[in-house]
Structures are given as structure tokens and as C-alpha cells.
View (cartoon, rainbow, N blue to C red):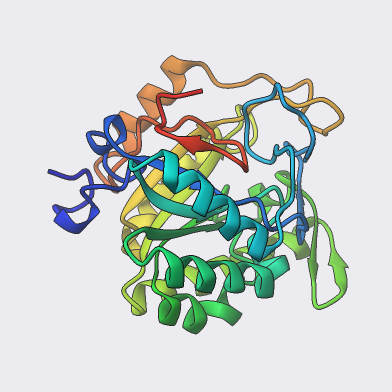
Length: 276
């Protein structure tokens, strides 16, 4: 049984199948330290051992170091079904290292699923590489589909060595995200949306994102409560309550299946979602 449109080949992916998360784990390889946008809720603290949230890792690996680490890990664990690259930056900013890491992983461990997470800005340039490498699952973080709302989520967007801000940055990012998702689905890649929910900024807009997700043919949507992080523009904003998120998921579940068991993984997460 699966959570996503009855696709039985997802049965061992712990993020796409809640039942599988009790038996199968994932490992995230932090090989991508750079980012091409600045989200107003993000502060990447690479060396923090005590924070369990996205963007945090104790080490940045080279592709070869990452695969050497997997060789050691897989000698100890046989319950890892997914190898992912998500952060602490955006994998597309270190695309050559990301692609090389996945090539090495595929050569050494052909049985594992490959998973990628990105803000989508530079994904269109690499859709063919993603499909040819067999990266079967791609997550795109979409926090708005309306530029008027999106402009409040981001401090800037960097594209082709130019920095964009405000409504111009929002329009560019949303255009590239739309292209990325449409092209990924054309290549039969499984797509999940991550949406960071911020009260009084984008929370009332989430149903519009879900409706567009249905148009895109997105397989799964993950509404993530914003974590206030120090030294960010949203540091003093209020996080949505568990009741807010539950109500939101129930309301938009008619448009796209909802992930309900996310643990907001670190960039170097290892093991089952129920593990620390």
C-alpha cells in the first residue's frame, strides 16, 4: 500500500509512504553548501550539532567522501532505501558535485532510490540529467504561486550572476518553478512539493498552491510549519500550530495527497524518520 496514487513501486520510500517510514530509512548527503536564493526563514548553520531542522549539518562532503561514507553506513544498516541530496544549500548551485555524487551512488548501490530537493530555480537546466541518472523523486519548495505573496518570502534571488529582489525576484522564481515541475512530470519524475507555512504571510494562500499542484500533476504535498530561526527576517514570526497544519491538510487534501509524517530533516539526516 502507498500514499501516492497507488504506485506500488513507492512502497519502500519513507517520505512518500507513511507505512514504509516505520521500516525503511533515508540518508541525506550534504554535498551542496551554496544557495541561489535567500529565504526569509532560513539560516544555514552548517556546524550545529543540536538543531534538528533543514539546512543544518556538521560537515560538507565531496562526492567521493559521500560515497565512502555510504559504504561504511551500509555495512551497519540494511534498512536505508533512499539516498537524497537536499541542502544545506540548493543542490543545483553545486550541480556538478550533486550529479557526480549520484553517479557514484548509482554505480555502487544500484538498489537504492535517488532523491533530490531544490527550490526549483535552476532545475530546468538539469531535467534531462535528472531523468537520465534515474533520480526518481524530486521535491520542489513552492511557498507561493502569486508573486505578490512570494516577494515576502524571499530576500533575494540570484540568477545568471544577477541578484533580483522584490516582485521581480518572485516572478522569476515562480516562472522557473513552474517550468521545472512541468518538465519533470513530462519526464515521469515523481514530484513532491514542500511548502513552508507562515501565518499572515502565505498561510491563507496555501489552498491556491494545492490547486495548482493538482494542475501540475504533483504526486504529494508537504505543508511544513515555519520554524522561527534567529538572525532571519522571520525570527520573531509565529509558527503555525499543529491544529492549523492539520486543518490545512484536511482542507487541501482534496486537491493533492498530503504528507503527514515529515520530520523536517537535517541536511545530514540518517535512518528512519522516527529516529533522532
